[in-house]
Amino acid sequence: MKDERELNAEILRRRMVDNQLIGRGISDPRVLEAFRTVPRHEFAGRASPEESYGDFPLAIGRGQTISQPYMVALMTEALELKGGEKVLEIGTGSGYQAAILSKLAREVWSVERIPELAASSHARLKELGYDNVEVVVGDGTRGWPEEAPYAGIVVTAGSPGVPPPLLDQLDEGGRLVIPVGSGYSQTLAVLEKKEGKIHRRERGGCVFVPLIGEYGWKK
Image: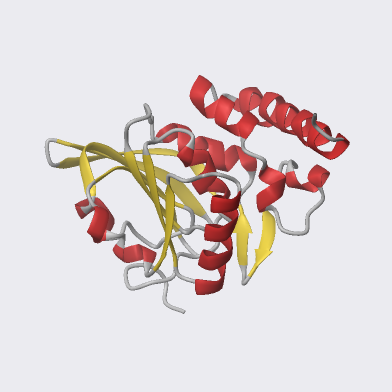
């Protein structure tokens, strides 16, 4: 039997999907179902359920955020996952994007540069049953070569350019989704590897916290 809090969160989740995602053109049925299922409020820190499902990003501490639901959905849909893939996420944060990806891929590796966030998100994901996600600490701009190649790579921070190691670790036919631009505004780029060549398209403007690392912004 679901308690009142769970029922309220479920209503808020479905409203979020209908208004913020479907209403803006997100159409992949598997992506929409993942957003209906994953409890965003469990990844939103001290935010209320109403705030957790709002149409805006949320601060999670250490200068990091959990992205606006629509932006998470747009980036996820751009990966075009079918279910059997190994995926790499750069920037675990609270673990929400990783939880969404876990519903859509066979295996998810997530790199977080802040040890405290990595530890808390790892514990949260395991507690909530997302057992196909592994969180590791490292410089996300270097990717995670130990498990490469990846069918999909998603970067949840803004970069001045595309880190070469991420392209190297992208499998043939795979897609890399990354915000590229200045420290204040970026363009969401989707790069696909076909026959060893990179094909790029853009999905509009966005604003993310900076991607810190060897191939990103310096501290």
